[in-house]
Image (tube, rainbow, N blue to C red; front, side, top):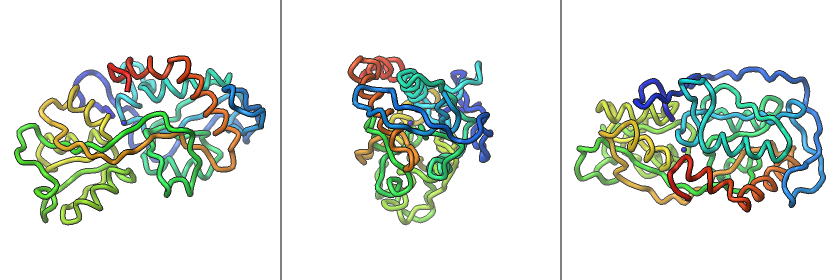
Length: 277
């Protein structure tokens, strides 16, 4: 589930679209005991920098992850969640500058620059081939956004030649649009805010992205737009971890289980979404 300087309300995505990632301050990977969660075995896991979990995100999915304009810091449900996980593991949490969404999985697969990817990443079989995932921490669907004054919005009406539908590159929303709207022109962009801005101005007939993000944008910043179609894709978000680091995946799963049991996850849901999900 993104805000930029285009969004009213004072939240922006600073650093968005950064293709290169700021270098980590540590040297090589170091081995750390897996101490988080009752279910975690005392196996070793590796970290890019000792005592720190380094996070890759596109920071463009308010209220899940974004950059607060007033502080320049990463904010959102997922940011609070990974910080809570880090606390459970006795680690400091560092969020790298924003990067394009479709670079996150390859970065985690390659290793050496970030420990985890946290950016409302849907768990899919294709992504499983590249990285491991933690247990899911949120369910989601896709949302198709149009201008609020649009009428008779259907998949059939959009699936015609000459209709432009904006998506975020490399996402499950993009895959859905390509599969279900083959006659439309699918325009791949870097983040949902740009996509919804294009819908607002009439550049695109619709935009497709994760439902929690689209609902938030329409309710808070783009009130002249609407989620016209809720697409029941039945997705689940997970934290991406390098396949060679199963101890870290296990440790994070233990921490997530504790946070769920203690009610911390529910508290964060209420904080960022106004209700338990």
